Length: 88
Image (cartoon, rainbow, N blue to C red; front, side):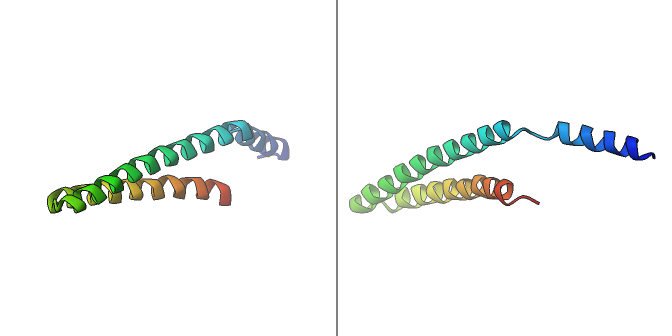
């Protein structure tokens, strides 16, 4: 492969990479999703508090599982966001 052909391949590769604006837009969507999931988690924890005050252990368990699931989803989104910020 000639030097010129290698340069063309590199240029094609670089052109195929997402732009800074596209990456910023994806980051914004990830942060919006974290905010949405945090709202859900807060709602589940409020439900846990009310159910506990009523002595409803089954509802406490259900909402704790929901809050845990949403928290795991937040960490998955956060991991993707951090991976892009840290880079290869």
